[in-house]
Amino acid sequence: MRTTLRRLGAATALTLTALLLAGCANGSSSTESAGAPQGVAHEDAGQAPMAGAAEEDRDVVTTGYVGIQTGDVPGVREQVEALVEARDGRIDARSETGGDVISAQLTARVPAEDYDAFITELREVGEVVSVETSAVDVTLQKTDMASRVATLEASVTSLRGMLSSATEVDDLLAIETTLTERTGELQSLRAQLEVLEESIAYSTVSISISSDAPAPGGEPAGFLAGLRDGMAALFRGFAAFWTAFGFALPGLVLLTVLGAAAWLIVRLSVKGAGTRAARRTTAPAVPQPAPAGRQTSTGPSASGDAAPPGAAS
Image (cartoon, rainbow, N blue to C red; front, side, top):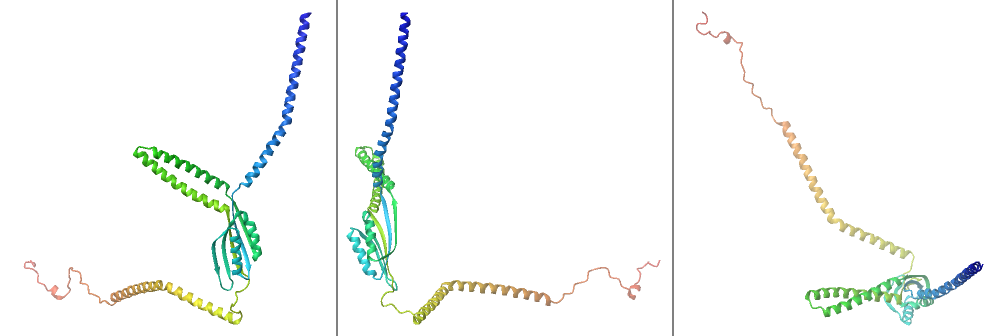
């Protein structure tokens, strides 16, 4: 009896223990499940600022074109140059043409952060008829070049240390050759990186300024202007013809000489053939000798020949 009670007590205790363990396991799972979204939310919240920071660290090369139309090209050009100087920029190229339509072309470099403000200022100095902007992301290119520069710098430093400690002539020559090659690559890569960094820091703006009216003092239009243009076109046509004729004259002379030589050869050949044919036609007939053979005579002399002696008998 006591043994049975002990067995029942032990089974009850085991059952309660199993239920308690199952409850703890479910509680832990629920807690972890409930905490999982919070962890994900914290992780997303931590990644959002990083994405924004990465977006701000992008390296972009910006280039633009602005077309301005105005009646005072020299004045607008001076204003544009003043705006570039005020933005701590510089003019890399400048050209100006005259004639019926005066125009000027400028290539300006302005700080990249002032690009939009500079374009806005250009709209105030004249009538902007066209604006084009191009932005190229060069972040990966710059990162790659910077990494290669760092690698080459470390390699050059290591080679210099090996060069100072080398004692064999062959080792010295090999190290010097490799060091020279690495140094040249490093200098070239540094120069490329500097150009890229400057292109990132300073935007390039091509500015075209043209007049919207003929230049002052221009010749009037009308019949005289049309007559003048027609005569000018006629003279240009004559000049073009004589130029082409002078260009082709050596070839024409050569072709003429070759054609005359060929004609003369053909003429002489035909004439020689006709002469030979005429000679064959007018040549006299030459008598041919009779063939040697047995001659028969029917005259009296033949019948009157005497017979040889003793023939009668």
